[in-house]
Amino acid sequence: MKTKIFWIFGILQSLSLGIIIFLLFRSLNLIKGDSIIGLDTRILLSVAFPLFLLLVEYIVYTKE
Image 1 (cartoon, rainbow, N blue to C red):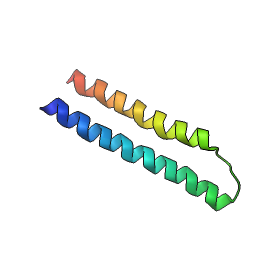
Image 2: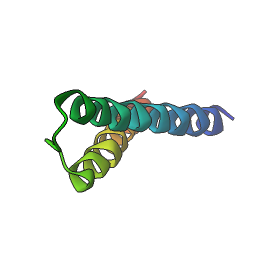
Image 3: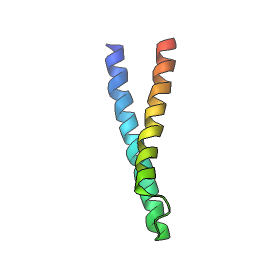
């Protein structure tokens, strides 16, 4: 049961973080007016960072 709860909240946390990162980079592009960070880089960072964080959290969770 604890593992299911971990995965539910871990995935929700990662999705939220990914959306926040994507919107942050989008707003930085809107402030500048030019495309400083490309769409492919925004998507890559929005997926890679939360996925890596979820993996690290899972490793820490399984060590306990």
